[in-house]
Length: 433
Ligand SMILES: C[S@@+](CC[C@H](N)C(=O)[O-])C[C@H]1O[C@@H](n2cnc3c(N)ncnc32)[C@H](O)[C@@H]1O
Image (cartoon, rainbow, N blue to C red; front, top):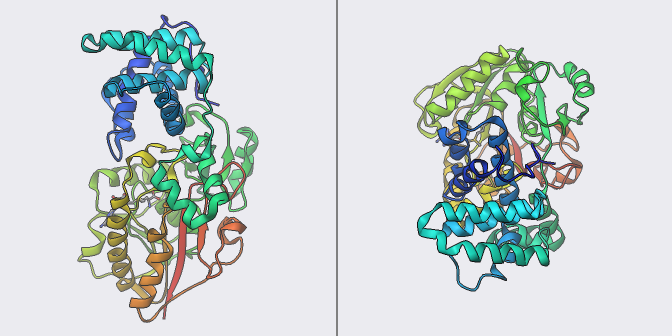
C-alpha cells in the first residue's frame, strides 16, 4: 500500500504539480548516492501541499522499486533512447498506470502534459502517448526478481547466495516495508503495538504497517520510541552493555544505535565524522531525553586517548541492504564503491580495537549484502589482529533471525529472513583478550 492514493482527476490539485515534483525527485534520486534524501528535503518539494508531496514521494518510490522491469518494458517499445527527461516521464507514467493503478487516461495525459511543458521536448509528446498506450494494451510484467536489481548486483548475489537466494533477496525490492520502532523502555512496546495494530518482534522492536505522519503517533512527542529497522536494532543489543559501562558508537549518526546504548544505561560517546549528521544525533537525544557525549571526528584519526568496555562500529558501506527504504541505493551503487568502502572499514576496525579495554567487546556491522563488507572483512581483520577473537553470536540472540546465523557465529541477515522483510545486515562480535 502507498501513503496516498493517486487522484483520478488529472487536472485537480493532484495533477501536474505533483507529477512535476515527482519528475524532479526521480531525477535527483538517480543522480547519485544520497540524491533521494537531498531531493526529499529540497525546498521545491517542501513547498507543495502535503497531499501533492505525499503523492510525488509515493510515485517516485513505486518507480524506483520496479525500475529494472519498468526499463525493460520501455526498451521493448522504444527503438532509439529519447532524452533523459522523457525517459523519466515514461518511467513515472508506467509506475502510475501499473503500480499505483492511476486511471489510464490520467497516467497518459499527465505524462504527455509533462513533456509538453518543456518546449524543447514537445516533439516527444506523440512518443510518450504511443508508448504508454501500447503498454496499457499489453500490460508488462513488473515483478520479475531477475530484473528488479541492476544486473551486476544480481549476478553478485547469485554467486554468493545461490539462484534461489538471489531471487528471494531481489523479490523484496518491490515490497513496501513496514515501519519498525525501538523503545527507550521495552516494556512499553506491547501497549503501543495494540494501538498501532502492530506486533512486537522477538528482539523487542514493534512492527506496524500503519501509514501516516509518525510524529502524531502516541509516545513520539514524549520520546518513548524512535524509528529503526528491526535488523538495524540487532547489533547494539549484541553488545550487551551494562549500566555504567563505557561504550563508543564509532559511526553514530543519525543515532539509532546511540539511543539504544544510552537507553541500556551505558555512558555513550557518539562519534561521527559528519558534523551536520551529528545534529540529528543531538536532536534525537533531546527528544528521547537520553544522554551521550557527541563528538565530531574522524574515527580513524581521533586523538582522544579514552578506551572503552564496548565499541559499536556501524561502518560506512555500500548500503545495498537498505534497498527496502532506499531503492535508489541499488542504482547509485557502483562496483568500485564496494572496494573503496571495504578499505575504509578495515582502517576503522583497526582503530576500534586500539580503543578497546582488555576483555572488551566489539560489534562490527554493515547494512550491506556484499561479502567484501562482511565475511571477507572479518577474515582479514582476524588474521592481522592478534589477541582478538570472534565472540560467537548465539541462535536467536538479540532477536536475530535463526536463518541468519552462520557456522562461525556471525550474522548474515538477508532481507527475506523474517516475514515482512528486514534490512540486509552483516554482524560480527569480537572480544579482546
Ligand atoms: C551507517 S551510517 C551510521 C548509522 C548509525 N550508526 C545509526 O544507527 O543511526 C555510517 C556513518 O559513518 C560516518 N562515517 C564515515 N566515515 C567515518 C569516519 N572515518 N569516522 C567517523 N564516522 C565516519 C558517516 O558520517 C555516517 O554517519
